[in-house]
Image 1 (cartoon, rainbow, N blue to C red):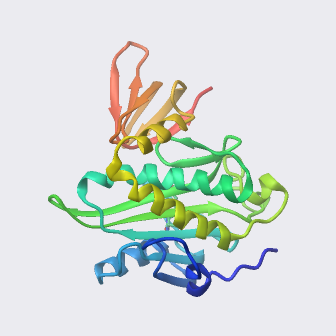
Image 2: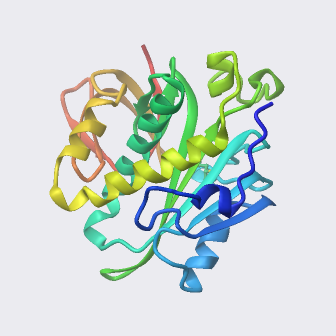
Image 3: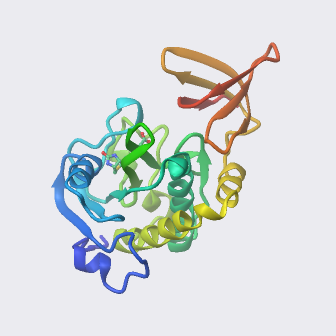
Length: 259
Ligand code: BTN
């Protein structure tokens, strides 16, 4: 077992970032790093503060789902204070940071499934939950929450086994959570600071989506759609082409790839 200490000092020691991860709030066990990050943001935590835990006992997924995060997984939330215009890009920053970091640390290639899953070999290895607090045009804070299945034996978790994987299951060896978190912090900062320069992050995100061109089933709110995932816009929304030729813009939903 790779025994990492995720203490603030081990995260920040010579960390090559300007502000992301320079402050760390760490707990061995907590409810949800996103929830703790929200409280810290409300109390004025520094921009880029990272909340990290060895395990979450009430990890939150998208669409009010439970996110399993036992020891051996990464549970990381970053507090940001971006301007409104950058909010739609945070998912792209986070998803690309995850794929870049996984490849740099393990050599594994990963793909993105709209809107925010990271897959290795077609199975989910990481999920991202962005939570924003906005009043009018003022962003009080944004939280990027990232969960990665690092050293989990998926056979111990039959409820997610059919659709999920872990880095250790893919590689046949364990991976350092500390190294992966430190890489994630560097990648998030690089991509986040590049946002004012414009479209390249959107284009890289779009080009890494396995969803495009595929026949999909999408559950969005109470509505089910089926069609071809035709394109994504720079605001992150998906254009779905229906069998009758009509087009729907979908902002959020749960996608199943049909073929
Ligand atoms: C999903 O795929 O449904 C999103 C999963 C997001 C999980 C991460 S783990 C760190 C952060 N804290 C949470 O409670 N959720 C996110």
